[in-house]
Image 1 (tube, rainbow, N blue to C red):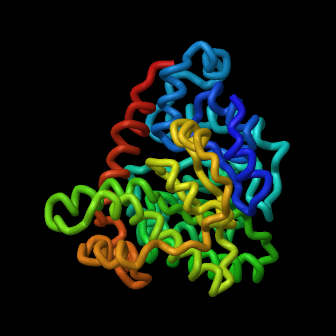
Image 2: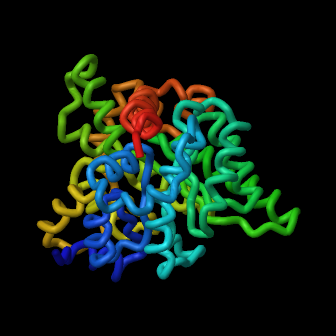
Length: 341
């Protein structure tokens, strides 16, 4: 189905549309509407393998039997991810951030930098357009820098706040300097900000302790954070791409339209955007200061919004981090580990 908003967004602005699903039929529709990249995670990989077994049966037949642990999960993820990497290859352009597909490291090990670097190095070898996802924990950002120095394409995910994406961009700058010193060309660099997942968390916080914060405020929290981060990135000249993800409504994309961002858009959000008739670049429109003022009454929002709101060692304990990591483990990684194929 033609989606005029997405075609406008991807064809007439600086924004880049990435598809957020691993279901084959949804990928085809997204690419037809201008998507030029894909995000996946353990949950999405398990979803496609379990919901469309007929499509994957032939490819799964090539996976060796008897694999266990990380080796098994990586083999099944590779089966899915490399299929889509081949489909995205015609769009490949490192500078524009197009033609890439993401593969995520083990969410059970978000505090082990050495483990993540070792695993990321394996995943990166699947194809030149694989972008490895690492968590934006202190250890994950340490691994991110190392991967940049090695020339890997890398994205920091499980990330919801301004301090997280700033630390990611700083890590990329350090990694690029190390890469240059060794004659290595840096790959793609992404800092995800899961705007809708932040809203979800702050909604519960507001219900519990901040009755003056309205629902109309909550649904702008993630947008406020990524707009602030975007301004700082531009001021400092970072080349790391911000990526809004985990969107919950069309507003999360509409209010960022025109930004030089890689926008991860799930099918349900794409469907919402098909009803948008006002094609306008809104990245330059600030969030109402009164909205931000009410949100700032919540310490958890201040942690997310202020550039120094959290120290890196606090990233792993932030409420949204715990919720999302749990989903990636219990609805993604572990179910893949227990799959029969």
